[in-house]
Amino acid sequence: MRKGATGMPITPTSKARKPSARVKVTAKAKLEPVRDAERTRRALLDAAEIEFAAKGLAGARVDVIAEEAAANKRMLYYYFGSKDDLYVAVLERAYGAMREREKALKLTDLEPLEAIKRLVEFKFDYYEENPRIIPLLATENMNEGKYLRRSRRLRDMHLLLVDMLCDILAAGERRGVIRPGIDPFQLYVSISALSYFYFSNSSTLSTGFGRDLASTAERQMRRAHAVDVVLAYVKV
Image (tube, rainbow, N blue to C red):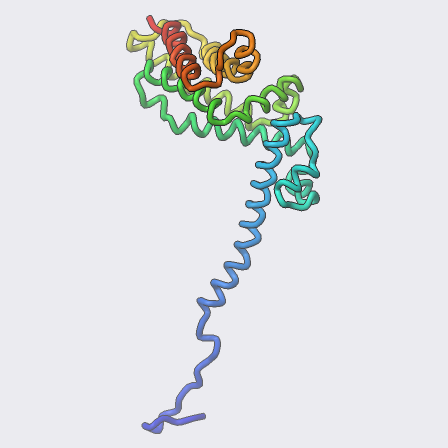
């Protein structure tokens, strides 16, 4: 053992004096595969949404989805099990994103009529900003909703939305600004239809009436019309 100038023994310095470096390396090694997995899963969902929206469930090809996601096709089956299960996951994500945006509006914190106006505007804007949801819904309607029925999460999301509308309508009734007896489910269907039909049938309506329904001016008029129709229906 070495001795210092004072004659006291000097304890050898261990090379393992940097545990923090090892901890960081270990943590990084554990986190990177997780991040890679999340990135791959998200890329597969992104590519699948495009493919299903463009070609429907029957026409979509898993090899195209895997190629567009820059992933191995085996990874698609690893994360989602099957093409059908991937399709359900795409539907869940599409609906989930819309529900999350609706929740972020905090409609129950607003005055009842303002809350309904905001919801109508939101539905219109959301379809305009997220056009792929239109063919996705069209595809599932052609499938008679059988894949949506496999998702308990989707049913719960819809029920929560109806419950929120029920609270808004009840608050409006108490304040004397919304007429009583409005079915929240029927109201939501009407709000959705006023926007969805416009975008899903924009091409045929444009051709039939000789108007460019994709233009900014036409869309602004339709948005304002949807608000007027719904508010006129719910007001006392």
